[in-house]
Image 1 (cartoon, rainbow, N blue to C red):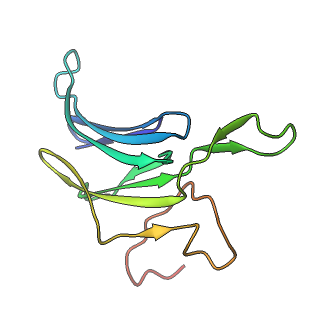
Image 2 (tube, rainbow, N blue to C red; image 1 turned 30 degrees about the horizontal axis):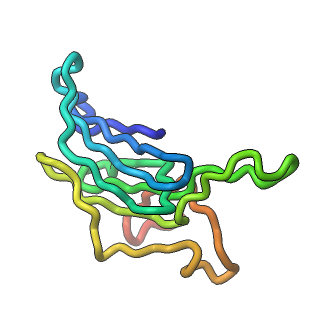
Length: 132
């Protein structure tokens, strides 16, 4: 599970990822304005084979980005943990009442990386036109 907060000055929203051993994953949006009684604003199911892991909110708190690669321990000893994920980056629009998966964003590391399947994990946000 990974988590990030929205409305940083007030701390009223919490976004978390849920993983079910690589079988299915969800992203949950919680209202924590009353910490003793949090309420669920939204739950998005990423479907079979998903394994959402790293999660980040953009600085303007309008988009939530989730990498979908949980963990595969395929080094020695092999096969200890098999929670692969679907190797995608998911982008959500954030509103005051929940989150919505942005269908215009479709980045699949199994399909879109020229060197072959890859496992996305962390990420960095840069402004358009930013020089490295």
